[in-house]
Image (cartoon, rainbow, N blue to C red; front, side):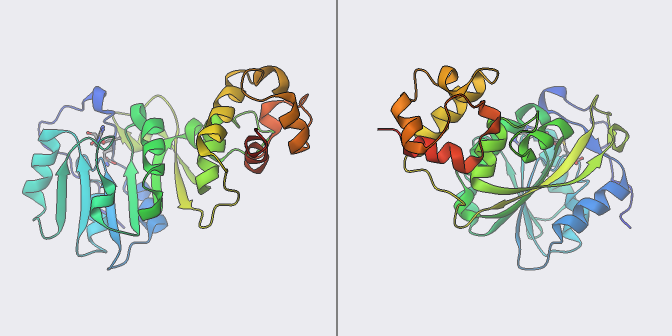
Length: 262
Ligand code: SAM
């Protein structure tokens, strides 16, 4: 079993960087087992922090990458791990060029919760060079990501991620596994890029616009929610009842509707 993660002496967690450090070795073990890293994997950790995951991951791998925004934590990691084991990128993951690290990337991280959605969307831009992702996120976000049509949490995040990935909710993590403890439950999720896509939109921008508009008015019918985006003929062409509610449409149906736009 993993040892209890080591803290960086004197470091005061920074709320603006979403710093809730993992301190439960059982949870660390479960995450590492879910990732199952083997030599030859190109592993990239987002937000290594004090190295709670980095250390046990490096017990399975000769080398990995990490992207950390906090200068003090990056400096502490650079003192702890030599560059031949850990290539440290002191950078903002929202700006970072993941494609520069190679192909078949395995991306992992106990993500800063304040930037999780923009980060997930940004990573879809790099899907071609990603093999899989394992992330710890707020449980509520993981539920939205994995929700099927008809579920009360099914929404824009579910459709836009399930368009690109197979989304697998792995396990729940309670607040006590972190210091400081967050106010909410967390969960670990696995994202595996779909190759090929289950259903590819003819015009991705149009598909994305329809999904955004539909869920900005989720209590309305499709006809009313998409009054400015989708003409009635398009519903007929797609063979879709415009009286349905947005949360009942599958990803494939959203694609069919956007493909029916004139
Ligand atoms: N992996 C560590 C652990 O499990 O204990 C730390 C997790 S903590 C929830 C999030 C980490 O992401 C922190 O180290 C924080 O400094 C870093 N971080 C926050 N925003 C970031 C960003 N935009 N780019 C890269 N790292 C970021």
